[in-house]
Length: 102
Picture 1 (cartoon, rainbow, N blue to C red):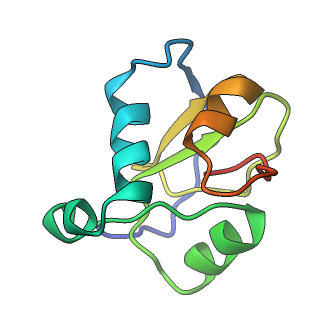
Picture 2: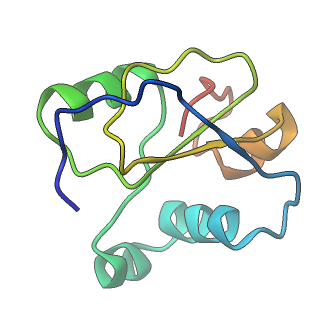
């Protein structure tokens, strides 16, 4: 996964409504198990500031999960964009007060 400089013209977000969704289960495991992070070669980061820094420094973004109404910066075309309700976002967030983006 290489970070490309092209931006999407129309950002389409996939909507997930199930707490049992495999992507959300994967994020929970990434947040809770170091061995799983090493095995996957991935980790979950939270918040708009970390997203901006990842984009600024060419991080290899795979998926951005956000709450409804959250404005996302221009993302590379290969980045999967997913929208979840606030309660689902809270279930995958690593902080007590989720910042709207994981």
